[in-house]
Length: 280
Picture 1 (cartoon, rainbow, N blue to C red):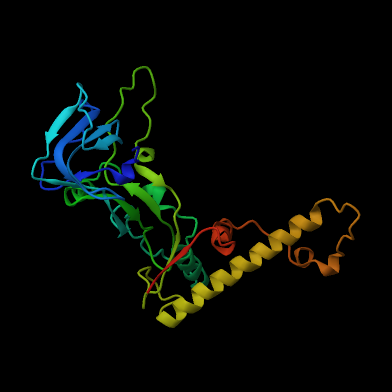
Picture 2 (picture 1 turned 90 degrees about the vertical axis):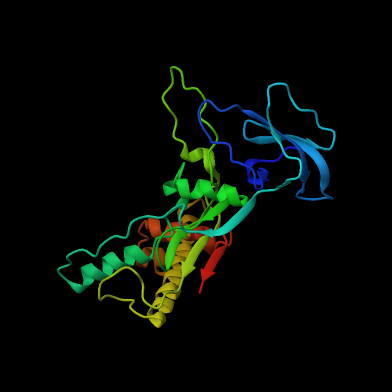
């Protein structure tokens, strides 16, 4: 059965194989008790992993001649676990508050720190991180990398804790490794409600009630942006005989819609195409 690295079996209590450029690409775990994702356990079976993907699994699976064999007698192999709330994978340093000359400048900066739906954990996730690689020793092969920050912090990503070995790059520009571990770049939009946001400065919001009001207003703004954008697209398109709205009937004429990357990034959540994770 073909299974992606998301279900890569982790061998409990056995030494981990170091990921290195000269490591073999075929492994066989032989004679172990195999707990499958569905179905009854296999009391003594073999798993063949080829190029980071489970190629075969079963009680009578043959060991390829080019495989590095791991003797699993007396041990248990199970599908990789997923940590659904990891802040290490996409951790970023906190931004110090600027020397603002006015309260408006400080509030504008703080708004940018607390309202970051466009931030993607997939863009900053750590590759070959020692702490993440150690999770494999506990059977955790994938994590939901949470975006760093408070309030509307951004979009999480499903990533593997360890990248496969590098392929030889002869005559080619070396490709980035981040894409090797990202399984799904955008999983959910995350919202938290801290009593006092970590983003410093004596600017709104400074309390839990202020944070709740801030989040509510952000989603209302995103909804208004969606309505204005849809209305603008409808009135600027072909009418095909339908009556075109008059300027007095069109909010986009009274208040021209300005491109806003922040509110634009919230549209998948507004359209119910992306779940929203609330952290109390």
